[in-house]
Image: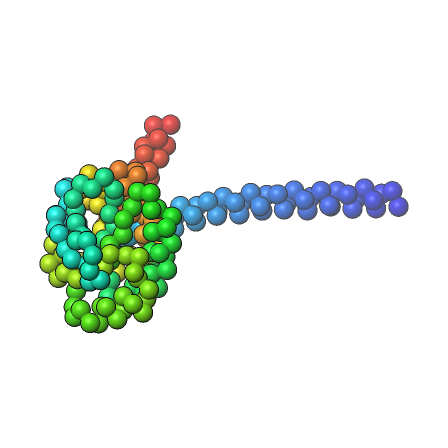
Amino acid sequence: MQEALIISNIVLWLVVLALVVIVVALSRQIGVLYERIAPMGALMIDQGPKVGDPSPIMTLSAIAGGDEIHVGSALGRSQLLFFLSPTCPVCKKLLPILKSIRTAEKDWLDIVLASDGELPEHLAFYRSAELSSFPYVLSSQLAITFHVGKLPYAVLIDEAGRLRAKGLINSREHLESLFTAKEAGVASIQEFIDHADATAHASRSVS
């Protein structure tokens, strides 16, 4: 009986050690996998005004009336231009996220919705989507100036009137990647990741 108990304890400890080894191995693989699928930011198309340059300046009228909207000026607050369309399903999906971000980032960020087309269609969309909390402008020239080819698209201009980030937007992560790029002082989150990878590789080479 005593001998059987000893054997069972030995087997149990071997199983526990095997499980520890498996967990450590899985943890390592998860880390490697996370590095390989690092979160991607908004896709920046290298056209139009360059990140870091002063933003083009325009003064536009909102479709609902009221004060004129100044785009690209040094207003002391950052400005997010979000280009959308009433017929764009992804744009509509992102509207609740924009409303959430507008509330969360209201201390430093203004969001302006931008599009072009017929005013009646946009007014109907503006009302049905309950967008009265946003300035909404119609200007084909604005889209041309920023070389907007696909929607939804966003441009982040900082408080000094400089273009800080831009790109195609399909998710909240893409929107927030613009803010991260601004804070990190890079053109895009991909540039930040590439720089971090290059630094890590250089460190490994030196060691």
